[in-house]
Length: 622
Image (cartoon, rainbow, N blue to C red; front, side):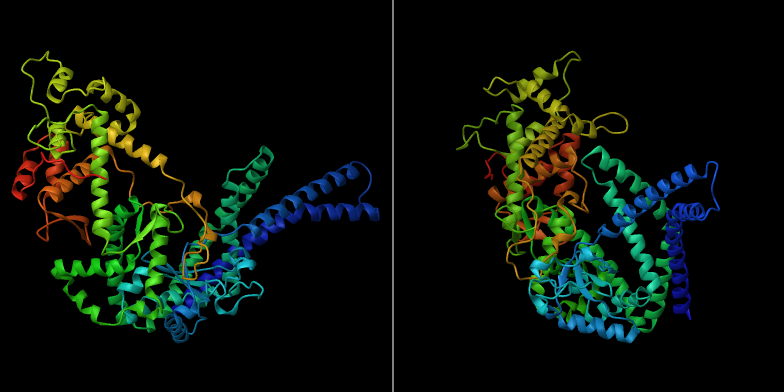
């Protein structure tokens, strides 16, 4: 009963959308109808004399202009390519068990099966309409829509044919974390949506709304000339008006479709669906933590983890080990994972990982010397160690630009080398001057000295602050006072922001386009352009305070590795970690923040003494 109610509500709303389309067509044809009446009346002698001839020609010209404008708008709406989610197509030959599971599920629900399956690097699943001709594969490459690979499935030489049913898009983390039964339960309400989607009225209403949305996107693109801008502005005004008129009905139509699909899926693994929904939330939390804490540092270094989905399993397993509330999740690992439904889960995971790097970070479309994959076993050395040493080198470059000289210690073999002591001394808040009229610039020169380059510390600070005035202003609190510990600390944070901005500006342009000759599953790059990347930035740009804290932490870790025998490591939930005797070193972050924000080095010095780190010894940098 609930299925019929939801389907009927969706159909009624679809008819309302189609009525709006019919009214728009009637408005476009009304001047033409009036012109036909006037012309026929004039030719038969019923409408003659007076001003009727002039009126007849005015209405005829107006009708021709309206018809021309309507034809242009209809052409834009018909040819505009609706938005398509970036996905990794899965060929049936590469996942026969997965296709069999989905088809069996569709048979149990008595709905048409999806036309194809694709994966997305997100914790969600949906049906996506790709019936528009622009979404078909280009003829020269003979890429089959279902197979998603060149020459697979015998599609070469056949004419393009849009699939009749929507494409099932599955979140790739689900395949690795969920068991087969849980995946079936999660996909049941999604697959059930193909039933209402097959109704002609609902399909026509969806095509109309998607065409309007695509036309609005076309008219929003920057045009080349004033004439084109004027024409597109008119088209955009009409399509936006129609879209606003359809918005409420389209939203209610989708709610009715979702209600009908959910009601139909109640009969399939209802008890297991409740448990599976818990796994959806857990997978989302693990995926978000893995991207922001583990993958993002690698992407910033020009490396992309090639097994992100497998990393989700490791991260959630680590969570179950730490959290007693998650102890029951570890017992699930003995069951068959859903990724066993794929013939080559490793290659699929690699393609989804590359797509995730492109969507969330804006990385290149294909691997290269500056964009290479990294395995989890190599992550500590290839990512963590390189990140720390690169940031430590950047920190010392900025200190050199500020004119901060190295501490003189004749007992050291390399007294001018990069040391942690130099950073600690510079960030330590200066003592309160004995008199109120003391010159702080003189105190800084006497305490930290000037380099032989002839540039004073005060001049260097002024130059860096002028280049990054925005970053310094970001560090001001609500009361108008600087958040950082001292003026020197603020200048150092501003210098790091400027140096990082220069490095990013000097980086080579991101390559685009599909890889050449790769026969493994991969993202379809033809549906979206590079100007929109990254589509979903994981984090806003780091502020000066965050940059300074990260760089100081990196310098401390380098000193611990070079003088105390520590090693870089990977924590699945927190990302890069410092290991001392195989155990993760704790409580470093708060001590670094105390130094950065308050200028107090004592908590950090106590931590260094406890681990046996020698700040006065030079470290190895990149």
